[in-house]
Image (cartoon, rainbow, N blue to C red; front, side, top):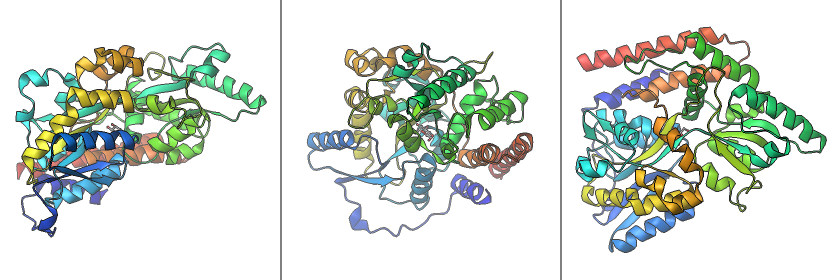
Length: 433
Ligand code: GLC
């Protein structure tokens, strides 16, 4: 914890300059270095990058792949930026990192890339997430919001409609799983991401919001994880989901593992991001192609269905020596033509509004039409330059509360709230100095 906070504070206050020890020959004016994660649809990315190179003769894009986990990718990228590495021109930025990257001076403001009329073309929440102190630090390539995927064949077989509440999902699921076991079909009710990493914060925020609780007051950033509604939601996950509706193994699952369980036909319901639609429907990658439905996340009785806002932005490193080329690359990737390809070929939810009316996009992703409201109303995580440290405190809390049956949920929530208050006070102090 102290290490995470220390590194976040260093990021916030970096003033000292570090001499880069990179080989200058590796920084060529015709080479654009893009730090990204390993994509779920590598062939789509490969062909899009080849298209950029074809349209920009002489430019070569070199991709450096980081881990696909947001938390690990952050650490790898932050290390490079902290060292002022000129070997990064363009990078992928999770929606939660923008305030940190802006405050640390790692992401260059890129307002000129999106004049006001052009900004209008994007979903407003996605632009707001990239704006800090009135300046734009990234362009959203796609947005994410949590959704419930389900086995449409099995729900139909037992005469159920997609569940509106977690309790309904539980009742339907336990019934279907029991009956299916009699026919030798070994399936569990639910799979999602419960490992200690960023995804856990996303998932737990959805449970808490769906019970009318909150992680924080968005104005004051005062933590509200100790409030009864939040505690009750965490307790529900611990007592009803872990080891009951979902195998205990989900405590080690990120997106890929939880998706594997679903596409292998071993889970009835699955919480994940929109990209699952394309993969689950592809018979080369899924045993359940053609038997999948998608709907809003369940809520608790009296609560509202709420999804966490996620998504990835493209930013330009403040230490890039190829800024002009970097801007051209971002304009290309986030333009309507390429976003449309990402939507159709990789199931990514576009950040441009017009694509939600596009016939071909909707033919590939019919759910986008009805579920656009989920993207428009998705709930952000707290916006703070110290987000990694705040998230670390939340991850530890949720992980302990879910995995350790002897841990007191209230006590763990209290400890995490104390830590978060302390982090915020450190930030105020460092700003005042
Ligand atoms: C997705 C979301 C991102 C989130 C991550 C958590 O990549 O787009 O915002 O932080 O999942 O695993």
